[in-house]
Length: 453
Image (cartoon, rainbow, N blue to C red; front, side, top):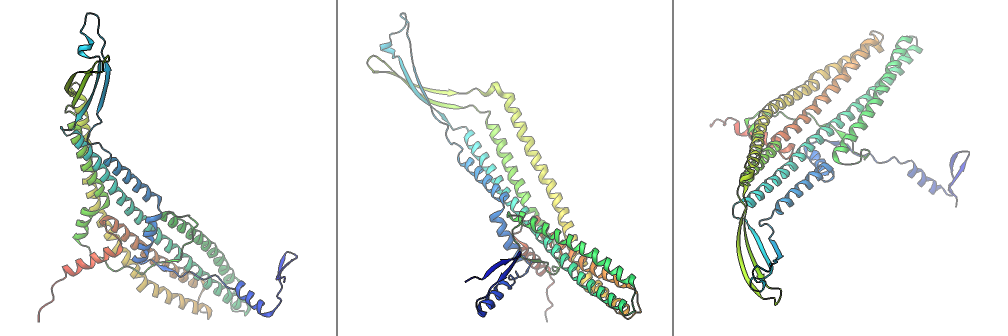
């Protein structure tokens, strides 16, 4: 039974029975199922963050560095390795009798960890492991911020493409109307030419917007740790977020929980531990040894020795002083970094709060005031032009104003949510929901008490 045949470069379908033809038509003509768009709400963003957590190589690398630092801390020796001693003695004819003194020497010496050097080295390694563990959280928080910005940039790019296609459909309708008016003698070729030129220009812009959307989706995939060409569901901008009241609690939370400050705090602990270890390096090393002698002739034991060895660090006193000065300078540098980051956080919290509220006001203004006005003006200009009482210039100007208002509203929403993502990073919170819950809790706490009846 032959269903397909090729003739003259085309495919011909042979159907031996009508029901097979119906089945093939339904299968071949069926469109692929459309993926429903995802509104970028906080739960959706959290789901994408979990994808990033498992796929992003930078997070995995930070985790491996933390594991390496942990293993390094666990591998610091509490006791130095003992030293074994083997040797022999040679006597001259005028010397002592080897059978009495013994000519085979053996022994062992164990350094004693009683002056705190090993403890300081272990605490230094543990502090460094704490730095790497805090750095893992910092890398995660920064990656989540970048992912949030990339998701909203992709949603904004998709909204730009949608508005461009809607504008193309409206322009095509205007071109058709202008051509019909020209054929009926009511319009001019100038109107047709202007609309056709505007249509061609907008088609080019929409193609560029589609390319920008593909680039934005590739950025999202890169931030997720996936192949840049991996498929993504359509991402849609949410409505403007609710008002975020400014609260001193946000600043207090940032100064207490911001990931970068926690890394610096661990670095300060590590610098202090390094300074302690350098100071203890000036102490001498002590070692307890046991040695014995026996005679090679009969293998008999002749004598034993007990030793206490002490290193002399005073000859390198200047070198130890330089190491201490180095660690003191590093500790002071970390303290200054903490002070600078705290100042930067105060400024960043203020800037983000201002940007979030400004973007919210901008989005609401376009949605509630500017967009209805431009839509009404566009409708009136289009009706006047179709009836021959208005000019095409008014139609094009009001159309551009309406499109610009729609784009500005979308940009304001994307900017607001991206700034909220940065604020989550500054405050060291888990997700956007935590930020809104904190804001609502502060609002209810600071609200005046209701009057009693």
